[in-house]
Image (cartoon, rainbow over all chains, first blue to last red):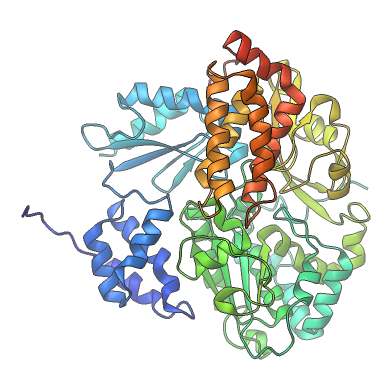
Length: 164
Length: 426
């Protein structure tokens, strides 16, 4: 069997899980919140972390797996440090979302769904992010960037790359 | 007298509790707890005519009055902050810039419906908005507006913030509840209605963020003041999210019944790049499209229904003459295909086929029969699903064909778009 270094939940994540324990009248309500904790730490839903959390919370892991398969905002595999999600819904498309995606693809040299070789950026397209008046827009990790132009995209990506 | 916005007030730093308090914040809560009974608040809200701002437009106070008396079960309040209807971005601004108004509205409503645990279901992507609400809750608690024995009234309230996971369907009230219970966001059949059997099988009220933001103002200024704004049956103000090809996209809070033409050309600055208007979707991507010659209509529930569309969430999506309607319909249908939860066959299959057929039409591979096939699928989906998502996927497709059939036929005959898409991304 392949040996991998098992990353576990950090102290901070475990504290967040413990804080959830008495938040809801019924225990199972924590499922989505637990996925958020794991996503915040790993940037995706790490399988071992789900198992660890399930054990910790005394909830069968199948509940977490079921939710993970339904809710699309959580990547199931590791992504680059910065996950670029470009909204491609009607309002953003009217304002040039397709050209925005093409521009980012060209700039980063990757296709939609791919990650740059240095593992810094991943690019995906998503449906409506609820920032329609700021179209075209994208979300990078948990920050929204609106009213995008080529110049703005250049600036944002350069800043993130330089912060490495 | 010109209208002064009371939800999207231009007050700087209104998210800070001191600023909020300085401008009359939490005075409605004090009044509600000290001078009014829950029944009186509900009566006032019923009398104000406040209708749900999430899309359905159901009278808010009447919804509250459906709660059973003494069921012996706890009553829950869910604040629907799962804003995901394409075009709609008003609740986001309320939560970012006026989080205390959201919290105050939630507390008063919880008091009115005798609820001690409220949930704010916020879409997962709204991370900063969730942080704003957390900060607002913490500061409100510190000042005694929230928590145990609020302002010495004996009323306790806990507010939990529940972040979703990027599923549009969870904005549907029964799906919101199944999601909150820890499952996949599958809608449930109604009846039973949530007011009778909702979250955890208990009586539950679900209200939109904007709806609740009106409540403190109604409590403070009274039902008659609220009714003096808007139209007879669509009272109060409404936040219109204007997006697409206008010079000044944004959220505009105006009286219900504001003419669409005024909204587009005065407030939103008219059509970009000196182009002509082609069409408007006046209530989010789930409502029928209005062609440019139909925009002399007032933005209220009744007027838009009469004009063959709907107010919906009042998200106004503007398309100029450089828009290919087949392309637009394809993009809209892709959304519903992606967001269908998959529970009902007509919706799961129908939304998929609508997108596939629109995709081939847009790419010059469609036939004349495809156009009628699309209309046939619309008929098969509509009214045949548990929740309104299936219904919501139909109007844009159907009305785009009814109003722009020539453009569809052009795609079939010439294998390309009738209009040249203009440069959009600068």
